[in-house]
Length: 287
Image (cartoon, rainbow, N blue to C red; front, top):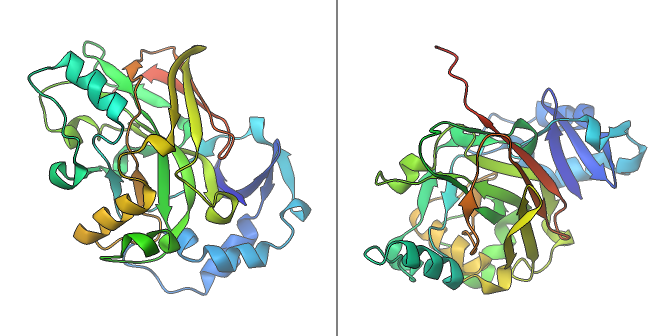
């Protein structure tokens, strides 16, 4: 199934070009659940919600093009990201800065965290904050954790997955710490929806592309990941307890490029679905 959040925090199932509203079913299931200290209640109870939904096509529907897609995960305890996980991307960044070659060993370089407040859905768009600096897109395949786990083995890691998404790890370039530059409001786009893991049995065999105003930027495949999805979960869980709804950005492929207000980013991924994101200038509400 393909679960989305949209408009004023509605829950839906995407079938073709329609969104079927399952908000009442979700609210009924979650009403009887204890408050969670950490994690996303929807993801934690996904199996029960899915059973309660039954035939998703029987629920009221509206056109997918008429809704504003939010992040399908509302309350992750953390956004975890791999810094350099494709050889070709390491090479392109090393060519820019020969004095600062990225590590090829994530277990030594470590993962990093993005602020939860950076998270938006594709319908909300990216708002570029520093127009005098280089801001770039990094389209990434994303893992969504489904069950609490810690120090899981690589061979069991995928048992703890709820599903997968696409993501944009937006980045303003500079000398500041990586997580600081990547945690700007709207710089963590998650979407277009959550595809449950039964629909995608091998996450390390997923091609995807990104276009900026129709120009091909990323042409990538998860089989080129240095650390595959299971190994990333193993590494993340060796340092953190992972909770339902926690997400892992698996790393940027080659082809990162600049964005500016007025641009449109369009992702293509047959396994997940299409995702369109508009780029605009940040507007200071306190100005």
